[in-house]
Length: 261
Image (cartoon, rainbow, N blue to C red; front, side, top):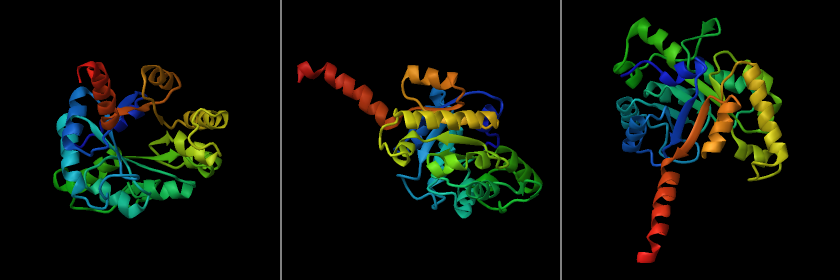
């Protein structure tokens, strides 16, 4: 199993990474994304897909990512430390936690990714999953995992915005991903991601994170929006997905041949 995490290395180096969502959770799609040059594949276990508690789910997904030369980017349903450990032990290196409220919640999740944390023992346990069985052993495994895994938090609740400075100060927090849809609900404008209250809050999150030296991520699906996201300093950008791409491309082709039907 490949031990180096290109995603973490890139964002720590100040580079921009581009990803795409796989709603099908298909190893074939993940491998194709990698061949195309996609840096990460967004897998949403919060709202859909199989149970992340079943570590066998990740066997073909992690293998496909390695073959294709990309990284999995897994949204968990929660920051439960037991779940964090289980998914990392299955070979995933990049995970993020949705709907966080407090710094303590984020710290608990980050601590679960580390054998050594903030000058003390972490809460990562020695395991026999894919990350170790097909990886390194002993002290090399411990040191490498601490250097390569990356955990981020989604800022999509007003409570998280209120506690933002404390969240951003959590040691070894890898990044924050901004969630405008849930923010629009929280701010009283459900679905209106362009409402001034929403856009101003997004700017507040972005500026605070960058001031703290924490990389930020957003979703941007068209070239102009992607360019704006890069200019705004976002380093993690999801630029599309498998189902939306099928709908767009095949839909356009069907429209073009409608006269022949």
